[in-house]
Every structure is written in structure tokens, then in C-alpha cells.
Length: 306
Image (cartoon, rainbow, N blue to C red; front, side):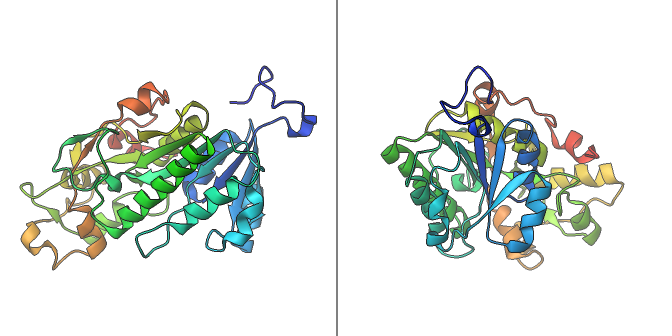
């Protein structure tokens, strides 16, 4: 983090604090901003004029621009000393032109000291329940995950070709009681089924506050061109996760259905999550980024009140 012992060169006093640009400043971005606010000057890219007041209220300086219109983000180059990129790819296709537009803009002037990109654990594809560390090759099974692989490739190319430091965070399911849709409560109330024990898959989680902390620490502690799994210590299959949540909330446990009939009862998006099984290894997160999880398992996180 910035300190008096490591000033940012011979700049006027008002510019000596580091400047962190958050691209994709949604729920996690705002949580990261809350941690950063006492230490740095915060900038946020937004394409929505109606969000400018909200961002200012959180201590961020809004910058107008749209990653779908590269000409509008060209002036981002040189504005920030560190960049946290949490903007999702487009909803269709196999590529991520948004990330490419951002990295091209960052090349235009002095490079940030670090670019942290928030990717997804979905890039690993189905691992048949195996333990997965960051050395495992990406094998995306869905267009959504392939777009994230394309984004990772863009930031890595930027890092190698521009001589810039880049860290990639591979993020599983994000949850938090104070996050919109951040717990299984509504799904449990609806009685949405889960898979039978024989067909069930391992799932991985991270509390939104712990994710925000990992994002912030990666901005300073992330190694160049390094990938980090960002997940907690929970080892549960999906059905067991929903059973646990039901017990904690005093709700009925969800019904179990075999995979052979699940497609008739579950939405396609949910089915896609149920087609992949892996247990993510978070050793690198703890040893290299030195993240101390506030919510080491989903039990603590689901019971938290904020």
C-alpha cells in the first residue's frame, strides 16, 4: 500500500498518493473501494451517467467511458498507477473485446504498476471433482467461460508485450447476505431441486468481502503474470451446500432429482453449473497474497450479518 517511505516520485503533493482505477465497479468493486478509500485516490469507469452520484458518494471520481466504444476509453492511459478490472465480457460470442479495448487504452501512456483482472473458475471446465490448482490448463466448456479465457489471454498478452505486471484472479460463486441475490434463501423458498447424491457436483465459493480483500491485496502483492484461485476452504457438493443453507435458515431442504430428469425441471444456466465439478486449491491465495479469510467456510459467511 502507499506509504510516506515510498512516494510516487517528484510529483506535486496532491498527486503523490497512488491512483487506483476500478473498471466494473459493481458490488465487489464498491467493497474494494471501501477498503482502499483511506489510502489512495479512487477512480471508476462508468458508462451510466446516473451512477456518477453513487460513485462519488463512495469516494470515487467517476470517469465517463464505455468499453464497447473503444474511442471513449482512450484517455484512461496514464491516469492510474494500479487498475482493478472487474468488468464482465459481452453476453454473447467467444471473445472479449472489452478487455482488449482497456489494455489498448492503458498502453497509450505510462503503464500502471499492476493490472488485476477478475476472471472465473469456469475457465477450468469440468474436472470430475478433482483438486484444481493454478497450473491446471484452462479447458472451458461454455461460451461464457471461453469469453473469460479470451479476456485472460488479452491481459496476459498486454503484460508480456508491454512489460506490465498482470495478475489474474479465478473466482467461483460469490455470495454474501448483504449482496443482491447473494444467498440461496430465495431458491430454497421456491423449492428448486438439486441433484441426487450420486449425480451431485463439487462447488466452490467466496464471500464478497473476502473477494474484495483479495482484489486489494493483489494490486500490491500479486506477482507478475500470476494466476490465483480465490476461494474459501469449503469442500461441499452443491446439494450439501443448499442443505446446509436450509438448515441455517430454518427452511425445508430442497428436493433431489437425478441428472436424467433435471433438464425438465431446472433452467439452462443452473444446469450448466451442475455440469462441472472441481475442488479449488487456494494455497497460493494464502501464501503469496497472504489473504486471511474472514469467512473461511460458507457456514460462517451465511450466518454473517454484514
